[in-house]
Image (tube, rainbow, N blue to C red; front, side, top):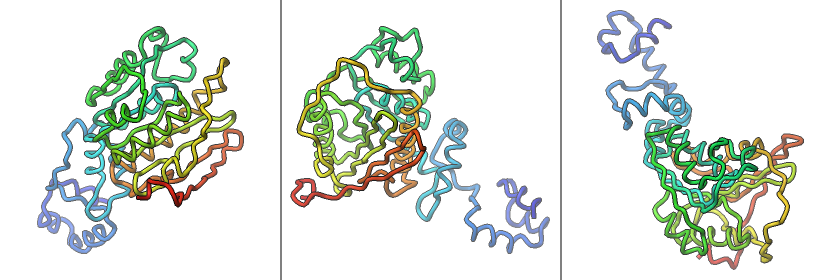
Length: 302
């Protein structure tokens, strides 16, 4: 049967296969029942370069093939998708790098800061020649060198209200809250913008010896951040730097982007961090999920 399987490359008709392998019909029935056959006449909705570049990612997406959806369609959705990253600190830049590698068609980033030397250990997208440059200018160069087939849009601006975020994310497929100043306003503004536009959003965060992914908020399907609970105290930026490593950032950014790929492509109906956060303990390498419930009096339920 090995020779038969190797012959299933689309170059022979069923009749021609029958001439070489008398058991063709029964073998094809077995393979079809296992869901491992593709019709060579079906044209994937991707061009040759996309098929070649993202072939292994497509193979991964095809592990989720089902009636009415396959990995080719999923990759096409990623190529057509638009994702916005608000803030390009260690988390935002790492998210951008991974999303760009995954083939998201349009990436947009929002920031007003310049790249500093102390950012080098935690911003793997950048290098020494970027020090002193506006972050978004340096990002544009690196992302286009990594993937010239996707589009990068830079917004050199400061977020000052939920209205600002609404204008930026309207019509997007997903956005990340990757900024935290002013602290309690930042998450509230993102929460409000998500509810007003219907665009889901995610977040990552680092604690002293661990890191967090989520919760991912999907309007109408998960509790909003007001349900989760937002501190009323606006915490000011400390004078001293917090503890942070690039490895912790990369770990949770990878998990977060993997969830976005599954959600935006359609491979998965939801995200594992939808309505709950995942805490990764870097000392013990253990995962802990914290689920959240809708608040009875929260406007997000109406």
